[in-house]
Length: 146
Image 1 (cartoon, rainbow, N blue to C red):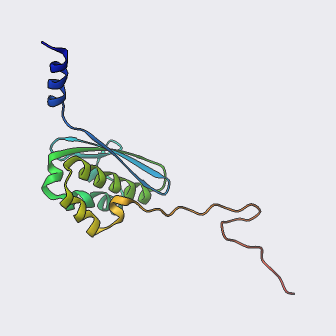
Image 2 (tube, rainbow, N blue to C red):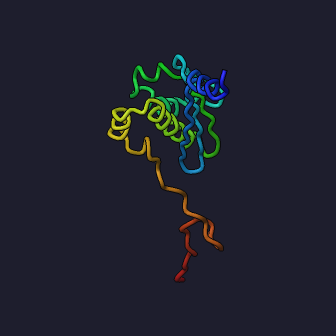
């Protein structure tokens, strides 16, 4: 058997895997999407057992909008940095981008953009840096008149 033919058959049999990234402020989420039965794990925990309910709902939005497509894949997300809500939004962005890339569906992409444009493109806002000699980014010295 020819080596090139063997390599081509391995490529055809290998399951498709998509890696996507989402960021919000200093939180970074990396999602790995594989063929599966609809399992979603965030930092090793099933999404259904995530402790903060508002964050759990935010992370599940792209899955709810995708409907039956989300049941065809397993998603493993690693997220670090930032606070719990920043992590949730970073996870949401990573999952949405990954599902669009995995299924290569223009309808799904348009649905996400209509629902919330920041679901795919992210939020560019960052914290303003603290200035030297002051306590905060925009604080000023107090002035006394008497």
